Length: 363
Image (cartoon, rainbow, N blue to C red):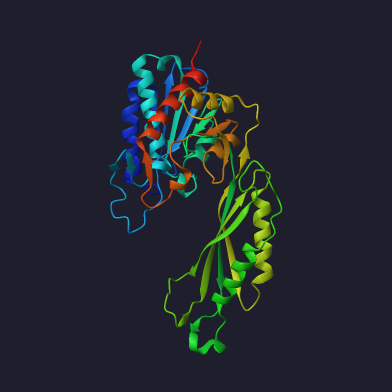
């Protein structure tokens, strides 16, 4: 389930049906045609004290993983695309809500559930407009991205760019008659990955920002060894520390491209994503509340930061302090044969139940 397709709609409808018995309201909001599920629990009126944020879209699976979208279980381990990133967390949250409903505790809570279907492709039709619209009333948030059920108190930001370099292609045997854009692109890739990045933040491990050229390929898809293409595209992933500004990183990359791509070559730069980073202040109540919920579930209280980028940044930007707490090892996200232990899933349910109760019960 990638992007806005029927599978996203069906998944959100399935969750809506599952939580409806205990919800005070369930609505499907659309941004640019893409669906967002927003459910509220507890007494109506007044701000919710907690929002659980998640997404049900996933990244594509490698062609070699033929049964990626069929859930498999073996020796207490679940295998399938999305079990870690992040349907496992969504399932644990739904189970926690049902557990509280069955015990009669849910009606005394103040809770929102916000599920989107486009986080993996940028959140432009999900959490970004949802948070900006004021539809969320929570005072604090929990994002279910995989942390191994550690409490992540911050996340790096990210900038994605697509750089298209143009030249004059042709037959590789007639190199004296063409302008080899592939050589120009290769030199630029090395220059970009050599850019100085001196900022450091000891709350992250590693403590430095990063820039990775993730792809270098002909725009027209040519792959014949004896053909030089007319244009080559580079995809750039630049990870930002919380104190770094996305625009500053973009300007540094633009300057590098301008310095290394000169006539007869040309270039165009497209910014695909700007995503801010953050770290919560140590005295934010949700931080310690989450740690206490993890401890109450019999797990070690471990605080860390997240090296990826996720929707928690947009909640924080909207004034909702948010931690990351989710089942599964982060390294399993996007991995072939992505896997999640059932024990981790059960522990997540226990953590979420305790967190909801300790954060949101009305006196």
